Length: 399
Image (cartoon, rainbow, N blue to C red):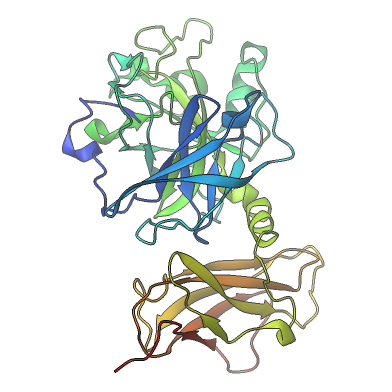
């Protein structure tokens, strides 16, 4: 990924290890490959369901980080239960069979519903090419690239304008579309087709290509979209594609699954896989053994003991880890985000990864702060709750 305005070796498109995209991974399955992205828990990859459609084989997830290249397998793969071949609900979660590299970036999902009109950064391992020539027929090797674009519309807006000339029907509110602009009105696909005029972002612009299926679109550093398909559309005399071929060239569009619409499925799918996660205060373990390698979880339990004013209300809090004697990056992996309690839920665990090593050291502590409650309160005058965990060293005496 991606087809870009100029050639892919332009530094603006390069994603060197250590520059913030090391959690974007290459996902292989059944002789086919796509892209995925590491979620905040460090054990799960979010990608596209169609990578696993009508194929068989084993799954490989390849990380490219400052510590090198590492490939992990999959313990499980979950397809969204509503996935269909028309591009709806095209999401999958790959549960890794081991810990992700500790230097791989972890990402929160985007939870707001204001994506349309905003610029995003797309990152993936798809075929390279330019807007004028389209994607290459094949790549000699996999290159992780990035480019920017803007979410122009909800995909259902296309259907409302194009009707039967559009062969598929996106579920309203679940897909986002962007076009590949070159600054010319004649190739402004969504301007031509649905009157959403935008001539693009100049040389920073790009579009997903084959191999980018499942790749993330980042908005404010969070996962706002998962790439699903590209299309070259015609409506009457309007055919904005610069070369009249489906090859990710100027004038084509792409669609991303709108992750904010699927946050409940993502959250609850992950929670179901957390081993030994507490479900009541008596289950909470305030000490966790470090281990020798990889990562293990320390859990924090959030519990709501009030009564919802509306049974369909989603409750939420924000959270962030904080160093004590333990240091983020070496002793544990920093975590921050928002935890939702969905209708019918009154508790959920927040996992924090503890980094294993074989270096003798003292036991260490770190904290998790919880703040910004929505739908409830911590009590009169209380703005923040803090819990502490102790990392127990198991490597011998410290002299």
